[in-house]
Image 1 (cartoon, one colour):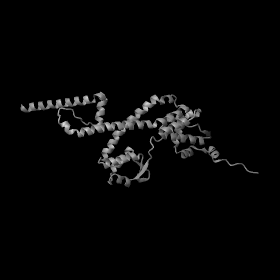
Image 2 (image 1 turned 180 degrees about the vertical axis):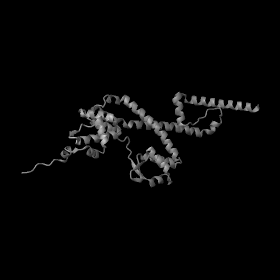
Image 3 (image 1 turned 90 degrees about the vertical axis):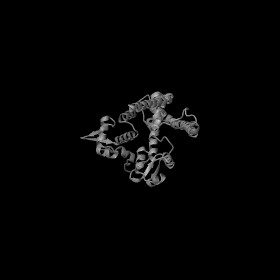
Image 4 (image 1 turned 45 degrees about the horizontal axis):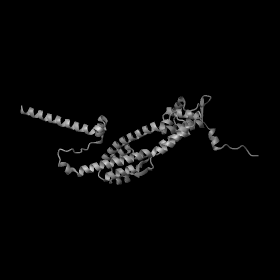
Length: 316
């Protein structure tokens, strides 16, 4: 006659009991955090046994879910809504699928690693701690915990561009400054694309908070379809703009001698991008040239008047 069957590991875990200190150790949360989650209604009420609270595997699983959602950028208020929806039987599969789709990689490029010696060699062999620190601040490099001489490179292509620009003679501070300016402009484009697609595509999926499971699953599928469109559009428009401006610059430099033959004719003047953007925001894109011309003319006139007044004073 055989004895009683031993419980499976899953059954043993399901029957596990934790004091709050044990739950904190198993989950990685602090006792104070667990109590705060209880007060917010994020954790199921524990069983009261004498003067102690008894927690089970469901509490541990819930703590891990909360930690995962926090890592994905959710606030505690939005996490509570999601968990309440799940507890009400509405499911979280579609919602978590949407979260995973949005938080997943938006490029096929794979991160790489590079040692400090390799990094120095790629930039001509000189050690520049200040440039490395700025690259870390910009996210071009990420430090590897426990490895002082090794870095993670999230975008090898971006690093390769910096290497080529430096080899062509561009100083490292100029490269990082250009990247900061470019990043601000690209983030504006990304924000506008997101607003555009939310208004015309995703608004119908986000009518409920949290969204219904089926709507969230369909929205996740739509993210997969639309994800490459932003980059494709920017690639096409950047190619068009680069051709236009490169041609204009080339004509300007090759035609410099011809331009000198007509001193009264108009000549192109290169302005910093930020100056042009500021003027455009003030008067509109169609009036930028007229505004710059008028402002320049007014400055010339003002200086002429100042010079005349100064000359008059000197003659007294």
